[in-house]
Image (cartoon, rainbow, N blue to C red; front, side, top):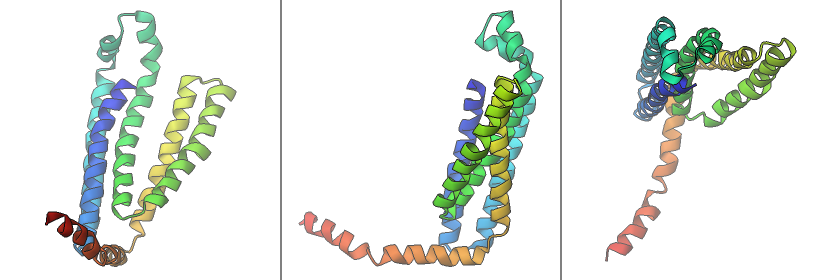
Length: 194
């Protein structure tokens, strides 16, 4: 999980960059640039995550000993490396997809998708695999992978069906809403400057 945390920090950076870039392009009135930015960030994060997953799979015999000297512990986690590799790739894709959707201003929608994917699908699936089918940690981790897979199935489907021109119009409405409130906010600062 430490390795996953390290790699996930890269994805979090892509999440923030995707969110800002997509929202900036929508606010600037560039629907195709917003779509292109979303596509590039998703591909880049997926590529980097896949490369890191392959490196981890290739070096898994050596990585164990960064965290432990014990042979028993090293052997116990040996079977979990394929699950770690899958989680790295899915996590890289999922994080950027969330950033893209947030950049469109759909925070509530992505929150519902996250909650439903993990609490309605991922956790029950992990419970069933881990405790009913006696897969233990592999089963619980499989539930997490199931929830993430559902999420990265829903988010691209919604993104590809998006009317980007309409999203630019929605972004302009949100910007205009705040433009009307500029003067009262600035008026308070002008009075304090005297």
